Length: 87
Image (cartoon, rainbow, N blue to C red; front, side):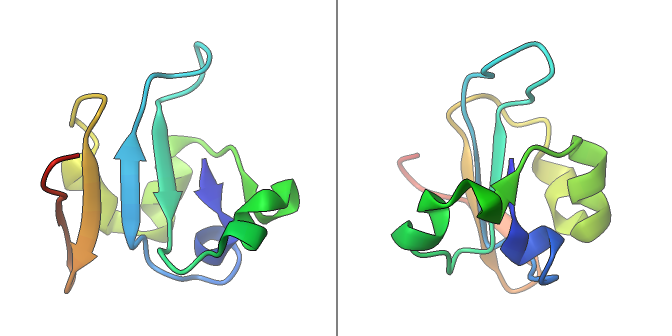
């Protein structure tokens, strides 16, 4: 899942996490620009399901973290995504 802030507006991934997949096609990854409001996220028209390669084409900074296990979370610091402590 990725928000339109990334796939439509071109914002970089500012926060991402990996949870248990909801089906066989799901990687479990959830990608956000980091400035999405609760109201924004409440509208299903503001986010969608994308192939992980598609999201990587929007922001290559995700590539080094894609092997992280479920329960992992990362935030952008400068040009890199770094682990979130306690995630």
